[in-house]
Image (cartoon, one colour):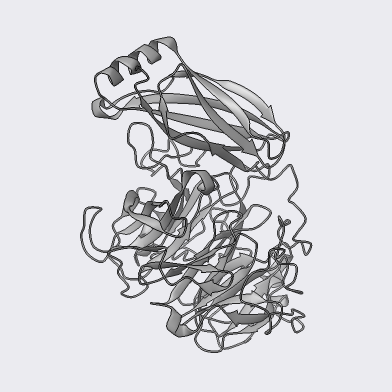
Amino acid sequence: MAVVATALAFPASASAAALVPLAPSSSWGSEPIHAASPPGDPRLFVVERGGAVRIVADGVPVAMPFLTVPNVDTAGERGLLSIVFPPDYTTSGLFYVFTVAKVADAFGGPGDVRVVEYSRSANPDLADPASARLVLSRAHSATNHNGGQLVFGPDGHLYVTIGDNATASNAQDLSNDLGKILRIDPREQPGGAPFGVPASNPFVGVSGAMPEIYALGLRNPYRASFTPGGDLVLPDVGQTTWEEVNLGKATGTSAATGLAGANLGWPNCEGFCTPPNPSFADPVFQYGHGPTPPETTGCAIIGGHVVRDPALTGLTGRYLYGDVCREDLRSLDLAMPGADPRPAGLSLDAGVPIGFGEDGRGCIYVMAASTAYRVAPTASSSAACPATAAGGGGAVGDPAATIPPAADSVAPRLTLFGARRQPLRRVVPVFARCDEPCTLRAAGSLALPARAATTSAATTAVRRSGDPGEWVQLPVRIRRGHFRWAKRALRGSLEAIMWVRVKATDSSGNGSEEGIRIRLRDAAP
């Protein structure tokens, strides 16, 4: 606490940046609240709270929405709250949204907080609205404390933040997902489960605990993000006294510490525990609700991103964030004791920040109630993100944010490719590549959905190595008995589905996994 208190006296920010509107306020159907991009994609996908997702290409919004999510409630803090694209979006075409239901429908009841999977259509600028598949739904009666963030970690898993439903005791109850951050595999699983739970999740096997829980003790984790170096930044909106920023390493990295299994303390503690309590993980930074000092006060934190764009002098490598009770933005150095809070030198012309976004090139965006802005080097900069905006990114607090992360702390980025419909053969080919030298291991299982019969060991494993960017063929061989089993099923006009899981491991032991679903047809003439 003494470190935090003494850090409040700081010089004026030396940052050089400006907020450049993406479009006039009249261009948006409802409040822009979040933005994201598929990996490496120059397009920006802006989420409107009312349910639309709009593409911004070369700094200009596309007139036709990419997707309009139905049955979205905008009462209180509800709405369509975020979108995320998995690392394999280029090949899978799948993506996920976090939404709050207005009325009961085929997916559940009113007020439910939901993660829904969609697929893009044949037109890359349009999603297929009929492809909606419910991944996860939780009853949520309060119109506030929804949480609302979806973000893929460097381990390839999806992190989901959910608020405590305005009932503080939920945050400490492991039998529900409220007041938690979850960690899941959002893809449909063999046997039909709507999502998978990583075996390394901290509460797997704990009696009475929901296995998808990654961390607990949160009030309203409205926003979360991963830094270029793989750290999870998790702000939590406070009640009457403190706003806080929590920090931890993602499970699966060599420095896996911090938030995996952590109890962030709510409602026992708000901000730092006083007196200290070893049962609860303290934040790395907090600020109060009082009238002074003005540089660090507020009422509800709006979490952002660690800036990768090297053109944003003075902000690169720092965590940019806002507060719903302030028009100005601020920044932190999360690697320093006390986090070195500073003004960002940026203020909204009208309204307050309600969300942030980052695109595939590393440009940062700020969402307000009436418009969306790019954080640009100067007021005369284009709204379009330049192709050379940012590189890979460094560790938290590293001003040289275009330096790639250390090889021993980041899992290889894995991309899969394979025909989604194939004739039944003993060998099913799948292709994979990594962004660094890696060893690839593939294995699969077969399922007959019509019979609800699944085998989990239908193939022999194959292992091969690849250079960065090199497509490696992984011939997945079906075991003889299982092949005959599937062949008989297909002759009987049943459908067979093969699930192939590929794991990539680098020389430091960091691993990532991806999966692909292949529909098999009878190969007989």
